[in-house]
Amino acid sequence: MIAAGDRIAGWLKPGAAVAVIRLRSMGDTVLTTPALALLKQARPDLAIWVALERPWERLLEGNPDIAGVILVEKGVRWKALAALRGRRPELCLNLHGGPTSAWLTALSGARWRAGFGHFALPAVYNVRIPRAQEILGRETNAPVHTAEHLASAMFYLGVEQSEIPAARLFAEATRRRAPYAVLHVGAAEASKQWPVERFVELAQWIAASQALEPVFVAGPSQGGLLAGVKGFAAFHGLSVGEMMSLVRGAELFVGNDSGPAHVAAAFGLPCVVIFGPSNSKVWHPWKTRRQVIEAASHSIGDVEVDAVRQAVVTALPARARQE
Image 1 (tube, one colour):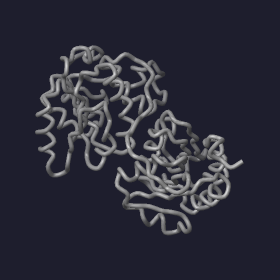
Image 2 (cartoon, rainbow, N blue to C red):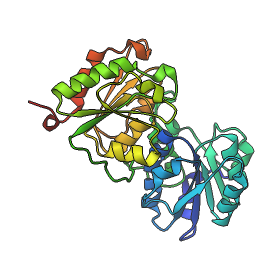
Image 3 (cartoon, rainbow, N blue to C red):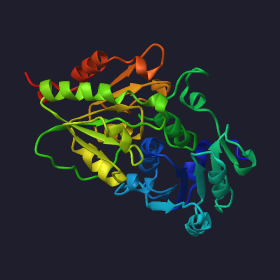
């Protein structure tokens, strides 16, 4: 066990390979990009490989901070392991913590195998990363944003502590005839979905008062959420790349706490995000103009349309609104 993980980034040989085990999901992958940028800035010579499941590899396409992606596909994970070992990483950093990621880390062949101290299967790791609060000098129970949590691993490994940058993604913007706002109505759980009829009411107001065309979006398996959306453009079943392009071209993002909100933040869009039970201090849009709306009850159904309207007015730059 290596007790002083704070020097490993400096110990790596020139041009060494580093494997980062991320696996999933959309928001987690987006919020890993600031950590990757910090490591690359500290050691531009490193070849950083990121292990991801489909379809999340598209999120890192074009990212100059990485050498490439190692695809981890269900049923043939041995192929990912072979590709991982073929890169001969000196350091394998697990940012996921589940059994598949632990298995990949253990068999990576890396000299240093790093993971957070709370991860299961501790024998896998010879570098145990403390809690982010300890690394960042926060109080024990202080909330830490996910981007900060992931970046703290890099600081512990020897990257000099500095400001954590914004996330960044790369995509061509969708072109539409008029400026538009993306309204994302889906979420991973029903408890995180604001009622669609309230999104429709909000969209009618945006169209009438904010000089923006509302464009509705739902996830690949969430087309039923759009059944009540009439009179507005609506898309579901978009690929990750198509969704990124649509969000990239927008002037505003309004949606539930979900992966596309982090995509919007990475593109620098003003974001209005409606929260239910999730901790907004941990999951709010990172480093963009943002408004977070949540009820005192933490029940998303208790969020009123008027509160979201006011958040839109606050989030939008004055030039984007009708006078």
